[in-house]
Image (tube, rainbow over all chains, first blue to last red; front, side):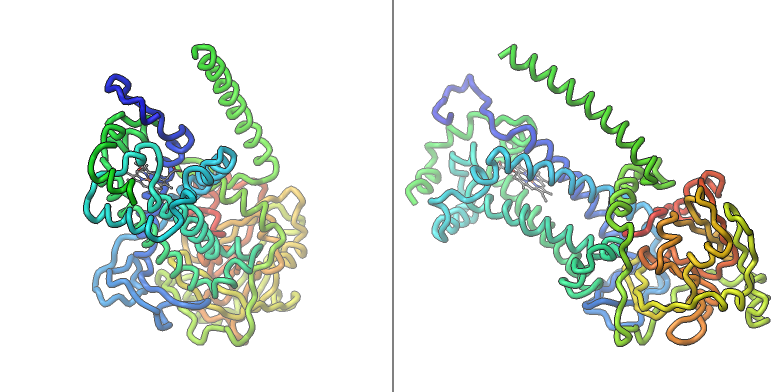
Length: 257
Length: 252
Ligand code: HEM
């Protein structure tokens, strides 16, 4: 595909419709979850380990912001407005969107071999030198490997695998472990974590890992050529530009590794 | 090429039609099995309905987690309530000796219980966690009589689908479905940690619903009504919570 070089054939298929639609639905639900989740934290910006925790017990740490409840000792004389009603409604609605989207994406990716073929690091890349080579190129702000016009590099693959198979399952698990109704049916879901407050604290930490992923993810997309990568994720097609980059010195250096 | 796209068009049409028809059928079946919450309308209706339906299917007979005595919180958190009304203060002045619970609606024998009447009913205790929607929690022992005993005493009718319960304080009322109302851990609570239930924790009478967040466990209960529909109550959203922007179902 990459050897079809003519400028007149500007569009090369890149992402399937399912990957594109589920990606943007995930982005939508992620930001809804993030905003509503942080809003919920404002009602009690204290975190604990173990089963129980409240304003009478010692916190593991506190977020130094005013709270939306007068009962929380924040040290500020100021009480934020209560926004928990819509925040909680939105949080769970967005969680459903994320989970159903993720299930659809996951089943599709399994059936089409997308996980095995496109996300699992290629056999030749399953080693540190390959990973380091990609990293050092990002650091040097080098142009992307031309192959990246139609496939992910090993660092992207590892990041996506971690998000899909580690962070997403963990954020769902720690979230459900806070549901009194869910844990009544599946008590191990919270007991294995070490208690309700531990689940809440881990949920908060995993949120920041996901935010870190998104920041790095977008930076990587930017670095590889934002317009072309976004065009590929939106329209499904990539321009032929990236195949012309094939001859750039960075790419050659990359290939020789 | 053109052939494929026509076939694709037809396939998508069939899939879309099947999807819409499937959704309509699913809604009808869900309604018949009581899987639709009263606050199912509005922007957040879809999420709320999925949550309520999923939890109802998963948790029908499940019991809230109970804890060993050693895990009872030394300092349970006393959440703030609005200043007491004169009506409450009058009862408080008499040591709640004249407190009554009126049970009516779809019941064979509407009855008004005094606290001592309630104390003659089977007495049970549970050590469960109160989890607030804000994020904090504590564990306490709760002592009282299962609501199911009271509903049994008054002969709740089989048509009843919800139980609505009211605090003596204005605009404070909730409702639960029959599965939660008859649930063995749903208590009319009169004691806490081996003593009387303190006023700050809802004394003299609080309805504890331990499979849901704290705000479903209304304090200072004076009236319980069994009904087959929540339409006629308040704005018809199920309870005061959705009227204030909070979800009716608080299992998560
Ligand atoms: C504004 C935010 C985001 C932008 C602009 C963005 C953009 C992109 C682009 C352009 C790609 C293709 C990468 C390439 O071809 O080099 C991609 C892939 C991907 N993104 Fe994002 N993304 C965003 C947020 C997210 C979030 C929030 C998640 C999940 C938490 C996510 C998860 C993924 C995954 C898993 C892939 C690989 C998809 C696959 O091929 O199966 N992204 N993203």
